[in-house]
Image 1 (cartoon, chains in turn cyan, yellow):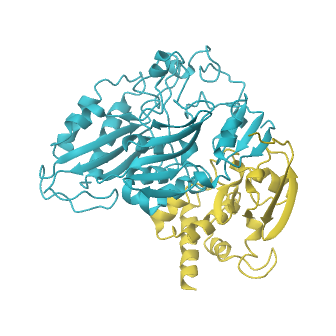
Image 2: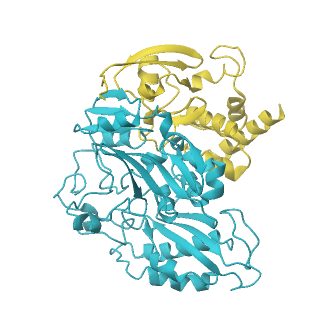
Image 3: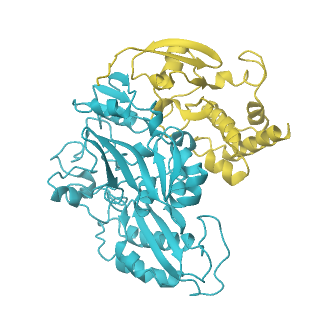
Length: 353
Length: 170
């Protein structure tokens, strides 16, 4: 790791004020940044530490919104009673991310800014192969090589990587908004629009851009509308714990009145008395690790009200909503796996699994 | 508003219950500082990227990867390493009576080569304090950040649960 100059910010404004200069990085937990420095993914002459900013800490209910400070760690978010009760999918996503000790450092603000786990991207410099993210214009080694873990939506010939964050999937599913501070003042970015697919970035004329956050902006926190539905986050991976998702799904389900109340994720409520008895009143569902952004299944969400909360009824709805998937030669299995994860998340959120 | 960026930073922290002031380059990780500057080599440098957990130490009582923590981020904090574990319970010095979790690891043969053990011990102490050492599945989930290539996982799990029971019974 190359050395850098260091300063502790006393206010969020002071931190933002340093970002106008080139090669200035923000450190909060540091679990990503230090590895970027080691691999040569990022290089900075100056690092500004926002870890001491109490104004960016804390989790509280504010009317119909849940407010989460950017410096809340993944363990703090995942184990906070308010988050468990009002945003269960987010709590579950946080606790299924990384390991207990990484979650004590990693912050919810920094987590959504983590970069892809594509092994061609995450190699030590100098890279022995092309990667457009590391060396723009060099090509994509993954597209020509191994790509079974890569995108099934929104990829281009330039890059097929996926965004690996678990919390980002829940934040997108739950219509969270990021509070952002820049040189011109605060603004908000809806989390379902925060990340960009390669295709969206290319259309905007910046093919390697990954988020809508400006280089001189800082995430200060999130606001989530309080949900009355049951929620779940399903993560499918090759190890039972401490592993990135192959695919994941976050769901929020409100059941139709008279068909039994909604249940919290993981609460394991009583099963439906009979198939088709419980029907969905409203649902939100997003897939993770299928694109460079969380992938809301909006077509399914429009179709789900009135649908029975059964695997048989949900499968075709999700399949139709994923009809535009474009798998790569090696990752067709992810279409099936993501479909099943979405169905499982909806069933679990509705209390039927 | 401008900030003063420094290439050498003075940091005061508590290390194993003793106050220390040090001057470091900002890039110095807690792990490198402990091993190279202080000579506490209990925390191991396994992967140096947060994947193996063998550098786990406690910062203000919470377990963290020493390789993912900068010394400059520890200003005013209290750091405990495996060397400080034996002295933690009583007034004894470092090297005193074993911590109950250390004793449980010995009693359950919770290691073979021992390379991961300092990290396992620190993670186990935190896991118990957090209230996550309730049953087999919970221990395995909350200890998953510590890799053991000898695969002593069943013994480690048993040791953590035994130490948790002992602590609860006291």
